[in-house]
Image 1 (cartoon, rainbow, N blue to C red):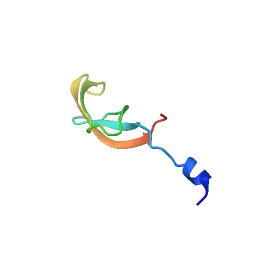
Image 2: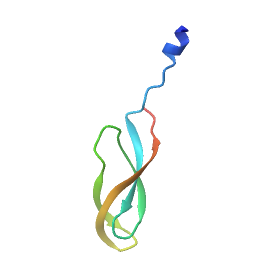
Image 3: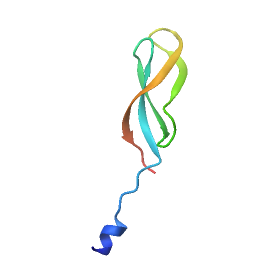
Image 4: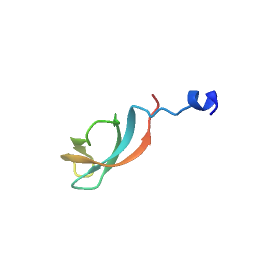
Length: 66
């Protein structure tokens, strides 16, 4: 085993970008959260309905830089 393989090991980032989706209308937006945190649920203004509603985490979009 070469020494360079040990030094170049990839480290996972601490944060990830996730897609949040409205439970009512399906409107989506992206939010950054910690990798080890629980899945997000947020109450936020929905522009399609013009009122506040619950958004739940739908899927992971990408990893963020450190």
